[in-house]
Image (cartoon, rainbow, N blue to C red; front, side):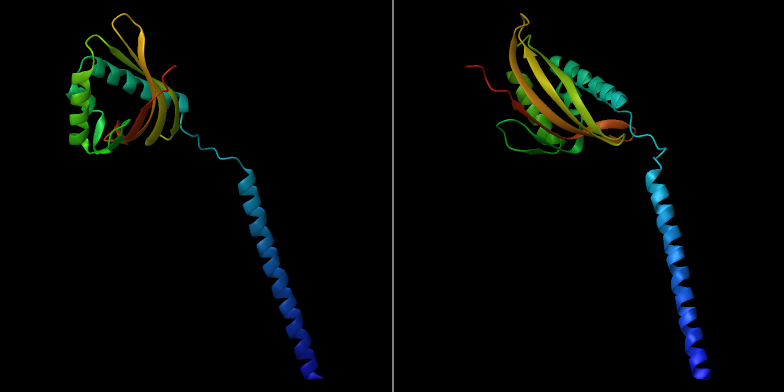
Length: 174
């Protein structure tokens, strides 16, 4: 009889332990569900401000480009930047990019102007990916070239610097 009582007590304690364990799991699941259902109070990045900041960089870039200032244009790039220009090999590092910028500016017709228009940005305050369009006009204001680009900007030492970019021509009208 003592063995029977001992077995009943063991089964009862096991059931009690299992019941307590499930209750704890239910409380944990309930807490997790409450946490999941509660919206985060952390604000995401202000994308409108990021777009404005990146457009200001692109406008400054265009000023340097239009002034044919190779040093100023190259200054927008990180030392470890990589660029993928249309119909050219990939360029790695600021020195290679500088040489390409200098060659391109030397070939461009006098009086032409370039503008960079930011279409969209995504990312966060530290890394921003930008898409945009390029427009080049001759001295009379006639559009002579259009293209598009994507740039990745990283905030380093408190300022954005271009670490990757790619650009290509729009299709020519037939």
